[in-house]
Image (tube, rainbow, N blue to C red):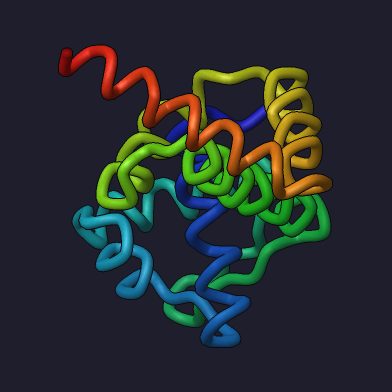
Length: 143
């Protein structure tokens, strides 16, 4: 299993390849706000652990193992964003909150959150009811 730091790199590499068609050390350094030397060290570790294939000065591509994990990590991130949006978290806080919690939840918890998101999405009146309940509770707090 990759560490949380490895997951951040795999997820970002996956996103870069999906959007740009490639990922380079400089792209990763910019996206993750780290030094290129840190990226090089992690990329070498990911290569050693068979998450990607790295050729010095040429770039890298995810292996099938890395791509599968990348897809799952992106799914987790998007699911948590959707969940926080449904439950009414302020939009400006969602990204930072997801970054703060995504590595601390088990995949079982992620699956259950997925069930809950699907439950709310299958009947939009449930989301409306939740919003009304939140408004009611906020009014009571202010009283």
